[in-house]
Length: 416
Image (cartoon, rainbow, N blue to C red):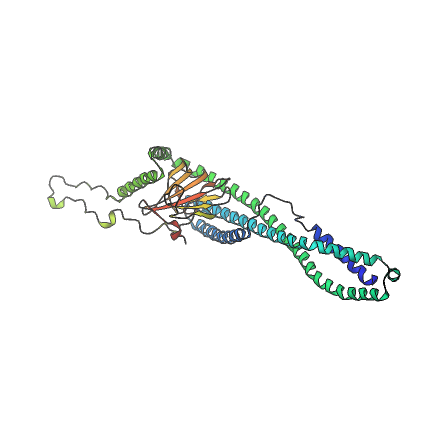
C-alpha cells in the first residue's frame, strides 16, 4: 500500500501547492482597470471595428496624398492620414485593454473555483501522507483485526484510481490558469507597445502640422481679422444655438454673394449705339441662386471614436432634446474634421469647452464640442479627417452636431 500511495501523495501535495499559489502573478501590475465582462466584450468588438475603419481611411488618404498635384493638398492629406493612423492606434489600445480585462476576469473566476477545491484537497493530502508514512508491518500490529486492514486496503485501492481521474480535471484547470496568465501578459505587453506607437505618431503629426503652419503663414494675412469677427459673434450670441445661427446666416450671405452674376461690361459706343446694342444684365437663372442643401458632405465621419453616451433627440438633464451625438472616447483622443469645409469658429465657448464650427458646401454646418485643445484656426480649409485637436484626459466627452440650412439632423444617418 505504501508503494502505491507515496507517489500519489507527492502529486497531491504538488497540486495543493499549485492551487494555493494560483493568484494573479508574474505580470507587472498596471492601473489598467478591469471592466465587466459584457462591457469588455462590447469594447473589444467596437474597438476592432473602429480600428479597421481608421486603417481604411488612413490608406485611402495616403493614396490621395500620393496622387495630389498641389503641395498644400498633398500635405493636408498626409496630415489627415496620420490622424487616422493615430485613431487606429487608439482603437488598438482600447482593444488591448479589453483583452486584458477579459483575461483577468477569466483568471479570477478560475482562481475562485480552485480555492473552493483547496479545503477537501488539504484533507485528502493529509490522509494520504499519514498512510504513506506508516509501514505495512506496523499497520498489522495496530489494534483491530486483519479483516479490517484488508477492508481498508481494498477501499483505498478502489478509491485511488477515482481520485486520479477526478484530479485530471484539476490538472487541466491549472494548465488553463497558466494559459490565461500568458494571455494576460501578452495583452499587457501589446498595450505597452501600442502606447509607445501612439506617442510616436502624435509626435510625427505635430511635426507635420508645424510644417504646414509655416508654409501657410504668409497666405493668412486676413486670418486674424476673421478670427476676431468670429470671437465677437461668440460674445454677442446668447447661447450656442444663437452662435450657430449667426454663422449660418454669414455663410448664407457669402453663398448669395458668390452666386451673383459678374459686372456688366461697359458698351463700346455710349452715344451712337442703338438701344438694342446696349448689353443688359441677364436674368438670374435657377442655377445662379443659392440652392437648398440636399446632398450631405461627402465621406462624412464621426470626429472621434468611442462609446455613444447620448444619442440624437435624447432628452437631456435640462429637459431639452439633444441636437447631436455625444461620444466617450479614450483620454486625450485624436479629434478630426467630420468632412471637408472651412473653419468658421475655433475657440472656447462658455459651458462647452473648446469648440470648432465648420462650414461645408451646400449649406451644411457641423459643430464639434468638448475639445481640450484645438489645432485648427478660423479660415482653415480642412478635409475630412483633418486633425482639429484632442479630447480631455479626464472624463472626455465629444459632441458632434450636423445642421442642414440651420436645421439639426441626425449625423449617424450619413455615416458610410
